[in-house]
Amino acid sequence: MIGRMQRADDDPRDDRPATRFVSAGRRFDRRIDTVNLPVVRASSVTLATLAQADDEGAAGIAGERHRTTYATTGTPTTFALMDALAQIEGGGHACRAALMPSGLAAISIPLLAFCKPGDHVLMTDSVYGPARAFATTMLARYGVRTEFYDPSIGADIDALIRPETRIVYLESPGSYTFEVQDVPAICRAARARGVLTMIDNAWGSPVFARPFDWGVDVSLLPLTKYWSGHADLLMGAAVVREEHWPTLWQAVRQTGTCVGGDDAWLVLRGLRTVDVRMRRHEASGLAVARWLEVRPEVARVLHPALPSHPQHALWRRDFSGASGLFAFELKGATPSQLAALCENRRHFGIAYSWGGFESLIMPAKIGALRTVAPWRGGPLVRIHCGLDDPQDLIDDLAAGLHAMAAA
Ligand SMILES: Cc1ncc(COP(=O)(O)O)c(C=O)c1O
Image (cartoon, rainbow, N blue to C red; front, side):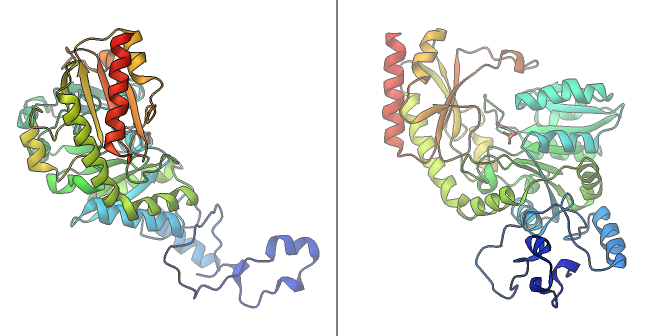
């Protein structure tokens, strides 16, 4: 639709000088097609008629595709990303996607959307720390009770489901400890009892995991990680089966949850290379993991693609590859030895995020983050293998382990 400011007979030369500042240069030739879409930065969406405002407004409230009267509901750029995410993450399933300003918002907003006071949520004990904090503080304040379960529970989740259970929340592999869950078995049990399943699909990326084939209802995506892949933006998305779209969309729209055009465009750009990037992250991660596995300082490496991983068979069954994120357990290390290992590395930076082109290292403090299956091992260090040459990463870790022994 053409809004008033784009009327074909508008000529800025007819305007007074001050008006020209706001009218000149706003008409462009829409017939010129480029490989990439333009970035649309917007707040106002101009409408041609009042009837169109009514019609478009009602369609936007109902969550119909590409219908908007204001940029909080969407713009051509954010709609393009929403469509791409629904197609990619949904695979052959009919899905819709909503954008959120961070991966954490893509966890908290859907939990708010699907829960009401009195509901019960079953959440894996291996969950991302801030998601646990949200559930135990804010959700609790709204009268939603969260119970944590052992990530290895599988079909036995059935025994924990109560009449008031609304959601089973999964994350596979788990944050920091990398337990692979039997997602299909949990989804089957939940579905048989009419309970919604929600998964944080951060690690598997769009390339190696297919949550809707596993049976989940809602997939939560930190687009900050591999989807965008360049450590230059924060964004998240919730992808839902079509039947759950009205509930999600209402919460997204009513909370004013939205993202800007520049960041949406950058995620679209990241998507074009994600398959190639993931295969390099996988190869480098495995090379480094195998090297660490035989080091005398290392008790074990927590990497689902290693045959030594306790749920390696589940990983082989459900995933088509591995990302570059894993952890290793040291036989022992004092805080100053951990600092010697992690600080002053040439290629590994110290940072909390992951999923970009850069390599990162961070000791994992999970003591307070497990209540059902406490961590009983030694010091845990999480690393993200970026797109560097894996031999440089190995040399860097060798220097770190050497510095650790000397500290
Ligand atoms: C497993 C997992 N889920 C979700 C998030 C949240 O993503 P964001 O950093 O975009 O808020 C993170 C961030 O580290 C994460 O590790």
